[in-house]
Image 1 (cartoon, rainbow, N blue to C red):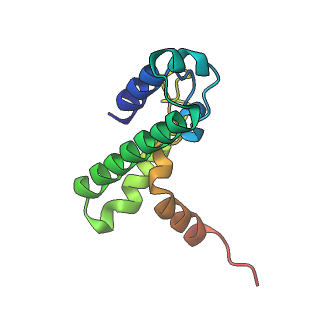
Image 2: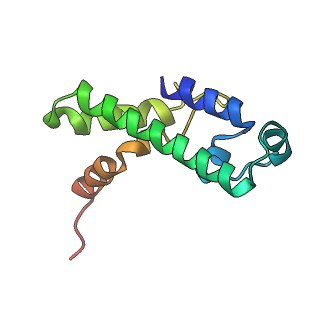
Image 3: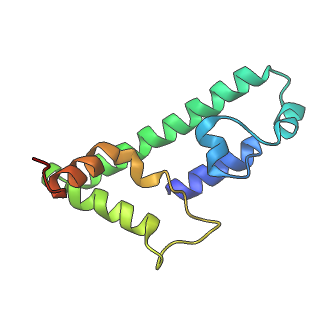
Length: 117
């Protein structure tokens, strides 16, 4: 669902890559500005708000689909299906997806890292 919604946003704004959506900096600004005469800064703000809204929605999916004690496992699963070579596809993978739960991923990483004396 995340990939489908991000793809729709990219298509609407004329973005070719996920990076453009995450930063709001479109490589092909002319494409979008032909459809909307507002200033580029306004467009950039709307892109960033749309992406934030999608990320907030995905966070809600995450929190409603699993109990608090299951969240580290689910966050790991989101990371795995995004980055593992078995699932990774060049044109359909959105690398920002698991980082919606970056706080949980970082907690897992710190819990599994050896402590430095």
